[in-house]
Image 1 (tube, rainbow, N blue to C red):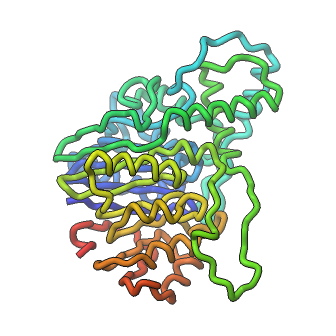
Image 2 (image 1 turned 90 degrees about the horizontal axis):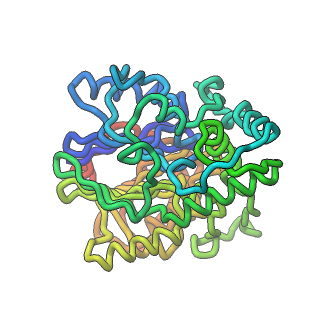
Amino acid sequence: MLKIKMYPAKNGDAFLVNANGTHILVDAGYASTFNTYIAPDLALISKNGGCIDVMMATHIDLDHIGGIIEFVSRNGSPQGREIIEVKDVWHNSLRSLSIQANLPSDGEDRKLLESIQRRGFPLERGPGANPIGAKHGISLAKTLREKGYRWNTGDGTDCITNDTPYRTYANGVEISVIGPTLARLEALRKWWLRELRRLGFRGNPAGDDLLDDAYEILCATASEPATPSIRPIATHHARRLQEAYTVDPSPTNASSIAFILNACGTKALFLGDTRAEDMVTALRQVAANGSSLQFDAIKVSHHGSLRSTNVELLSLIDAPVYFISSDGSHHDHPDFEVLAEIVDRPADFERKLYFSHESKASRRLRDHSSRSGARFSVHTEANDWISLKESDV
């Protein structure tokens, strides 16, 4: 049985998967998300003799990795994990990429890197925020290394991409990575290096804890370049996704780990914060290899943003269960145009849309009638376990 739990991670992502007893943690929201909601569940799994088989940080945004940094910081040493044993961590950071040998950096370069480190990650906001845990300047990469975690199936010097062979685990579980491409990871590194150069860095960054910190903090701080928001001229004009969609310009989101999870024939598609165009290419290849693009559940990309889901992507995939993680506090995600396009398509089954929080878009969807007459239902504050084969009948 494949069960998925979506946590109330504010504007972030946090999912725990139980695939026939194999446990996978996909992102962990903010530090407060981990401390309040995730830690007790992990402690219970550990008490019952279980472990986390894979923990994924899909990409470098605080609303995805803040809770993982908190977890790794609290979980102790390899000699005795305080909360739960973690067999492997997936996280693409600077040291996961092939880079040139390091050249000495002068004192001014190190001062610049230290200033970025002191700046820390963006502050978590809202009720339950932990400003100390959210703002500390230590990267997940550095923390994983210091705490002795198996990282990207080794020491973290390899990366997780769509060239990664599918992984098999106990209990008939298989994970097939469909993103990112190596080119997307290299594009993020080049963007970061341009930012460093703009700030005055002159050295050749490679293989240094301080650089690990600066890499993740800069990526998390400036991961969503601002683009004009397109809104309807007249309030009576209801936009369709086709006319509202714009490509997400974020190099960080484009670096997201996306994957297909198969547990004895039950399949879930996790899209991270990926770009629609990348997923169209990847999923067409999956179909060309003979696999169905009908899933039992789909985690919608980028909190339901209309910059990350387009009509072409939705024409390829479908499922009776959709997960949308956002409280609407950041960029007004989810966007109603995405939700409407999901439910407007013809289907001979009911689509159940599970939201981590109530939002303007989820409330509006309750009053929406599918253009095709397809059945759908809206479930907000859906933070309990969802058993897919029970929920999709």
